[in-house]
Amino acid sequence: PQVTLQLVINNSFLSLTQREADMAVRGSNRPPDNLIGRCVGRIQTAVYASRAYLADKPAQLPWAEHLWVGADESLAHLEQSAWLAAQVPEERVLTRSDSLVGMLECVRQGMGVGLLLCPLAQAHAELVRLADAEPALDTQVWLLSHPDLRKVARIRALGDFLYQRLSADPRLVH
Image (cartoon, rainbow, N blue to C red; front, side, top):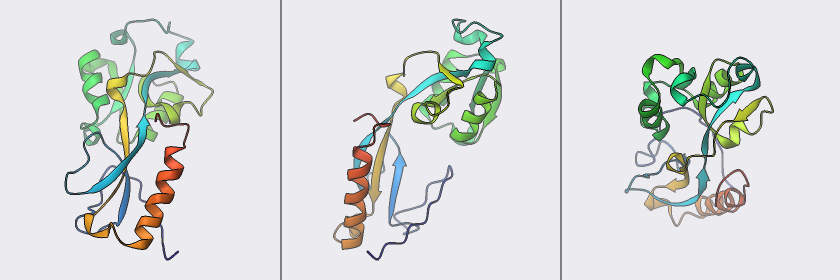
């Protein structure tokens, strides 16, 4: 009741402190200390390639010998970016994207292998997971809001609803 949803999907975070939003569902392993929230689970990440890409290259090549799709500088804060920089020479990263969905599409099109969010990649039969999910790359999913809103009935109702649904989502690790 009395809740209006506005879905904003981009790489910038709206400020809950400045009331640009009342509540956020945010992927973060370090949520801000000035917000309150609950962790609803984790999203796993693994290396994937398309069947078309693998038609020309054996899947068991060392990581440094594959062509890669990676995140651009706007996503440099992600653990995936640090992993890629440590495992793969820069010249092997041929394509970069400013979005995780963009990376998924590049991998789907056979442009290289990439570290993809498992729930996104698993929805596409043309993608093959090349390794187990890397626990160090897991991203926690948080429901966050400003502490001043904790007793607002509509915020509590929405938070409880989202927590219940997201906590039961099989695509997240609980």
